[in-house]
Image (cartoon, rainbow, N blue to C red; front, side):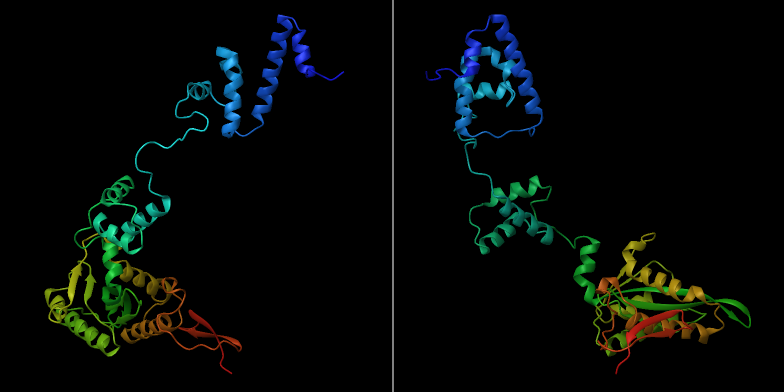
Length: 349
């Protein structure tokens, strides 16, 4: 005789009301245990939603106690045929949302250039993107926290440094106590560092950094920079009183802009400050300097090491002055200042 009923249905058919309630309670507990071992959210197909709605309608309000695959509220929307009805579109009426790829391009251009939405729209047209308009670009910028208008003025200090790095020089003073016949004397050197190349031009030491001396060092720097093929358009210095109006006029007479950074703002002259720290920690602090010539020797040896041998992280771990190096051969060490400064290279065959 063919089996007309599933064993479970046969058992339910012959069960009493009390037994049936117990069986339902057991199945509910078992379903909860199985559900707890599955992902928090289960995605169902439109066909599966239709089956759930078909059989769930027959249960009536008791579905709230039984359903676990979705919330009772979601199931009610399925039954009522709302936006979440199986097979219905979830898209809201109106223009489709701009793709993430286009949004990323818009925000990238805004962050890299500071342009306004009209200029960005022009760039999109050049890229073959015609599906967005001015209002959409403006809205995307505002949602991301950008000013939809173009950046006005000279921008931030960091932007200024990046734009003018090739022709921008920072200057500062070095000081070192030197033993002389008259005792300890403070000696000074003034230097200029190019922001892009990290090349340094430094004066000889003096114990008398007068207005005339400082002004002459500015002239010397201009001449030496020109001889080495460097261009000077901007010079940065701090509020040190040794930088006088005569010092500034040496540059201004050649069309160079002089920028004085404010007091207690070392980050605005960070390149010069970093060089001061490097030469002091790597060379000057290790010596008891005996006389002006000794100080100049230490500084000159360090400059050669700094330019030709010392790796610079900002330059891809290369020295500022590019020299031809052997790729094969014995590895040897070159020492300067009694072994304080070391440089490893391959000995040419």
